[in-house]
Image (cartoon, rainbow, N blue to C red; front, top):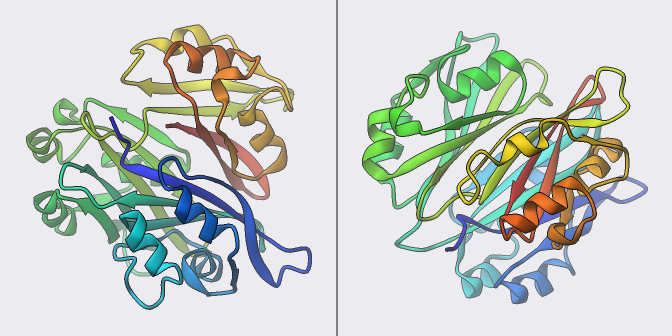
Amino acid sequence: MKTFIQVTEIWTPTRDRSILEFHDGWYGEHQSFGIVSRKMCFGYGEGLPGKAWAERRPVIFTDLQNAYFLRAEAARRAGLNCGVALPVFAGDFLLAVLVFFCAADEQHVGAIELWHNNAAEGAELKLEDGYFGIAESFKTVAQNTRFARGSGLPGLVWDSGMPQIMEDLGHSGLFVRSDDARRIGINKGLGLPSPYAPGQNYAMTFLSALGTPIARRFEIWVPKADGSALVFKNGECDRKPGYGTALAAVELAPGASALSKSWTSGLPVLSEHIASESSPVGTSAKAAELDSVVAIPLLQDGRVTAITAMYF
C-alpha cells in the first residue's frame, strides 16, 4: 500500500538567512528526485519552499510542470505531480519549510486542502487551494463549502489553534461533508493550523482514504505545563486501532525521540528508522511495522505548543 504523500523534505535558512538550503529528506522510491533536490537552494520567494517563506503561509502547487516549479523535469521523471510547502516561523524568523510531494496515480484517493479566512473580510473559512487526486467531485463540494469557527475539521482547527485528528469521516456528525467522504472512501482527517501570517487564518487539512492513506499513522503530542516533557494527546492508526492507550502515560524527555527533538529545536524532524528508536514511540512504531516519521512543530508566540507526527 502506497501513501498519498511519497516524498518529504525539510529546507532551512543559511546562517546569513539569504537562501534556503537542503536540510533533510525522505524519498522512498524516488531517490533520483532526491539526488536533484539535495543540490538545490532557493531564494526568498523562489520555487515552492521560497514562496512559502515569502508568503508566511502554506502553499500548494497542483501542477509541478508549471514554470514556477524549478524541478519540473525531475518531478515528471519521478511521476510526482503535486507539492505542498508548510513554513515554520518563530516570530519574524523562518525556522524551516517542510515540503510534501504526491504522485500521479489513477488509484490515489484523498485530498490536501488549504482553508483561509481574512479576519478583516468575514467570519468564515473558504477553500484557498487544494489537491484532490482523482476525487474531482469532492473538489467541487469543497469549493462550495464554508466553515464557521468551530465547524467541521477546518473550523475546529481555527477555533482551537491546535492540530486536530478526526476519525470515521463518512459517519461523523462533526464532519460537514460526511456523505461525500463516505461515497469516495475518505475515512480520516488531520488538520493543522498555520498561524504565521498576521491577520490571516489558515488551516491545512489532510483527508485520507483506506486504500491510499495520506500517512499510515497520525499523532499529536503536547508539552507538559511545566515544560519537562512531551506527552501524547491522541493518535490514529489503521494498522493498530486503539494503540494510543499504551502511550497515554508516556513522557518524552528532551532528546529522547525524534518527536521531542522537534519540540526542543522548533524544527521539523525526519527519521527513516523510527522503529529502531529505543523509546516507547519506537516500540509502538515497530509493532505497527512503521519505518519513517516526520515531526511537525507548531509555534505560537515563539514557543512550540504541539508536535504532529506523520508516519509512512
